[in-house]
Length: 350
Image (cartoon, rainbow, N blue to C red; front, side, top):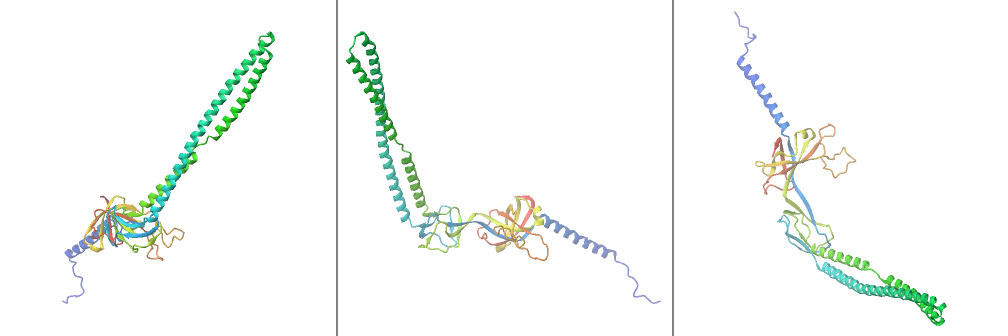
């Protein structure tokens, strides 16, 4: 009897079980990996950075000395550079002299005001005396006029009393006019005091500018972009160099918008700086970007972070920047602009 070589061979149950288990294990491991990747967003597009200060002088002038060099580390309060103080000193002296003149003028006006006030007081007293004399003259005239019909006084006495009364009226009128004129001449020190305050403010501003002829480091940092030297004339606000604030370092990573739901402010993050990706730097999610600009947003100002999409003919998820504050980063790895990768651990606060 011949054997059929094409007859079905019996299925090896053990091999089948191993195959099924291998497939199931692969599927399970893939599911675990996808779940971990979903719950712990990962970004290969991260850049190390820090806050930057464009160091400049608030006063214009010629740089006499620069006390730092490119890539120097400086401490808060270190002298960075100096502006020629001579013109500023002259302005201080000029404004101080102007203030002295204003104070002298005010003092002279104060003495004049005192004299004017005394004259007005004397004139007011003259009015009081003239009014008293008039009252006395009128009283005397009335009494004599009452006695004249009985022959107790002569007509001459009555006429003399009337004359005195008329003179007293004229004297009172003159005294009132003189008092009005004297009081009108009494001035104030308002203008002089305002001028003194203006000169004081000018002197304070001049002294402030002189003090700012020396520029000090506002914080610890690194000097970069130093292209000027002593002798350079600069204007107010012109950047002399950039100071990297080394007190805080950040990793700015971009994540697809579909993963932002799994990122919370305060979540712990792992940052690997490519200069030494064997070292893991801990970080904490500090902020999540609220807006970016792209080629699709023509009317949006370019001061938003610009993150282009990779493909224009396929609708892909936009990426948004997430800022990670680094915790105790190593000084030898923290360089502004260095590349890094970031993993955010969802639900794990630092």
